[in-house]
Image (cartoon, rainbow, N blue to C red; front, side, top):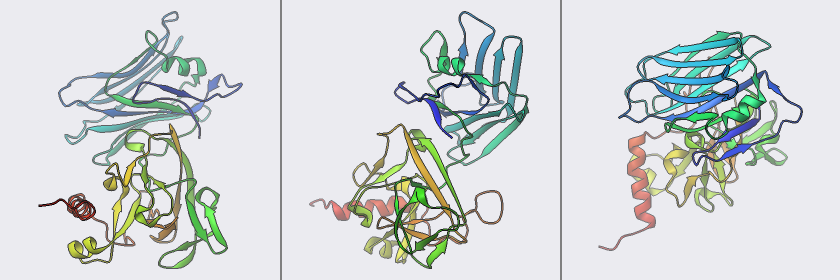
Length: 341
């Protein structure tokens, strides 16, 4: 999977060259949408229409009460894919994915609510391959392209973007094997990796993927020397980090607890990593939840259970709820920055 073009929240376009490629027969269009509660009715999220050849067009429309509609037109050929759904009242941030595979004659339109984790999708048949000229126009200024203000960022990739956001490490994270340090992106299924609780354990499954460092996909940079790491550590927002100390023992009666990295962001010891447009990630899965020594910081591995949907049972440590994190972080900040009476 490789990102061809990304339009970031500042309206800047980041592109990559694909020499000799004129037609993208497999790919994905991904958008992150932040809904305005004061806006009702259909929203044309993204639209491209050739001003010289009106028969070439792409249009993605969202109606919060009825669902999503994608229309693609290339001359006399036209495809329309709809996803009927009524968005939940809690829905504020949406990830919208259109993935197509013209050789296999299949496509999929998905809506994921970041706040609730709800995912709905519709499958279609006989998608049109996307000419690279149309992709270029989709990232060009008006009059070729219209982008609604609700669209935070969008991008096109050569592969299928993973749904949801798995707990992951940046590709350059240093882990430990029986024979010494190893980068996370060099680990293969079957390799032994040292874990905190159970020593050397075989990796059962791993996935390498790239995501834009934007919006809900922006990873978290944990600053050194905090979190017991000699250098900065970059992880996904959903990666679970071990916290320990007197505040943890006092509030929860535990030596160690797990918190999602997104809760640690305070723009001092932890901040969102947005300096690069795309970040390479690695997810590792073992037979059970394991704690990995990631450059000195303990991070929990990915665990999917025995089903096809991600399940996080039997966590390696207790995971704090959002409301518990507010109390803990307030106490930790107060201890490190005492205020005179």
